Length: 372
Image (cartoon, rainbow, N blue to C red; front, side, top):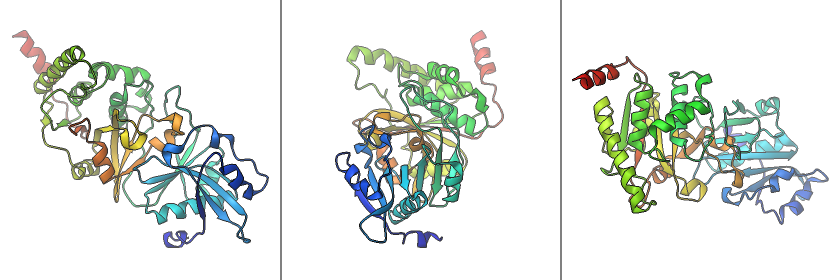
């Protein structure tokens, strides 16, 4: 079936509301709806049912529970019931009519064979996840737009504060600078300890830590303000010593050769970087995707027409969010542009990691200076 033909698949789309949905789903007959549909409050992720009407126009032959993070370019099938292939085809058609980049499918009950028959590719299961980050053992993805997107490993941060370290580690595994088996909790905490501004990682400290850990990787910090950042929510006495640590990070950056670009990093520049197979660690606010204004690091590693593809190391399990949402997540350029304006004054912070090159003798020069 061509993409144009897929958009013609008939469906019924209704909001998913726990109080009324059981009545609607009785149209499928006696089949039980999975309990997980009602196990969490999915309202923040626009839950809706995509159903396939029967020949009589009154009953449904199939239905899928569909959600998505706000301000993104995908839909996620939580489950499909009834005539499952028909339900999945209806969701794909629904996504095409909305001009979305992707459909995902949580693998609670779907087999790899069923997913492949519907045009979906298997996602590799996560290497790690937080204790409260429930999710299926398997997941699947179908791209609806062309683009050069490769699959980094998914690693869910195991603490509330190690997102910066995780994005850097995943980037280096994706670049084949770090072995996949080396991506573990020890590595996560070790890099965080070197980069942290207690407990967050600010852009310059993160860039310096990456350069120290991988001397062969070109690193550029992008920060369009000349002041300490991510400190506004602390009392004044807590800001002072953290600000001093950030000034030390600037000194370290100058000493080991990490440039700090004071210009605002544009979406075009991010697209160019990932097009060169570089990685962009981007500081964003979670207000758009999750509903609370918390600074957070994500990894930009690919692009499709109209959207940048990220990996997000954190999921909001309370909203039904899982690693399937966070992995290979397409975000429209305007949405990502808005998300990455952080704090009240809308500064932008990022770290670009280039492709590895010859190792410069950083440590040797530093040691030589110290002997003098």
